[in-house]
Length: 316
Image (cartoon, rainbow, N blue to C red; front, side, top):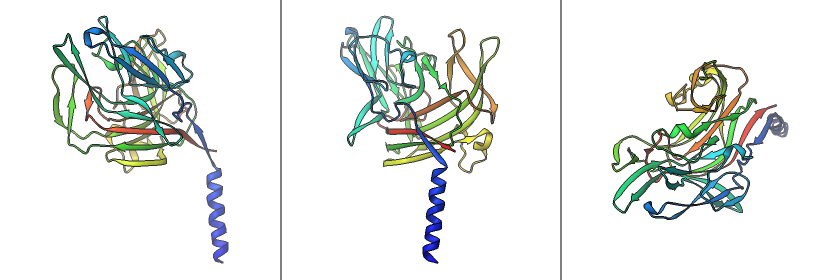
């Protein structure tokens, strides 16, 4: 009788696993990287900085914008090449790191600084972030960082979960800082965390060029404590408004809780306004992993998130 029970249990487990299909997100295995060498302007020190992009392996030794639109990869990164008033600068918070015989992606919260003419020192708090979408380079201003971030890529499937490997180093401090290319660093109370998110939206454009969306699927998780590698970790995706009925629902999982912009049909960067929830098929997917959870230029320096093998899970 015991043998029969074990056999039935094994058969059920195998049957359930056979009902799942796991698909890798393109370039989500973090094995291919573009290495970019950016020579900063002499007025801010003239150093050569290295930036990385998750895309077919290549090396670029010129101060040129990376054309994410023409890349075969759906990923873009927070590391960016900037040219402001003729001054060229690079900021790197995303990099490859060895993991076994392959590579993973390392995301760092950093306090970047610039010394202009050897006198004026300015600070920028930057979180390491990767997401599906496009960064429009060169960045020409720090006034509105979301104006160069085209969030999301076309997508029409219905996954039930996102699966990935991750590791985190989180300082459990109750203090965060804000620095927006200014000479002043502002401190305030707050608890930073690494984030792993997937949002599915059904988007459309009205006659005036405004972008609207219905939230179709939601998967969110924040990491508040340091941890070693968590392999095959699943973040469930809840369809329609089901996310709001979960016991672990938090306000930050809801509608319009993060700034999302995209280019409309005329190429103008436009705010995406989520109008509500829907169970229809999506038109776009936003997958985002970050070493911080706050808005741009706010966070706790030193936090790090490593991610690898990003996949989507489907029920057959």
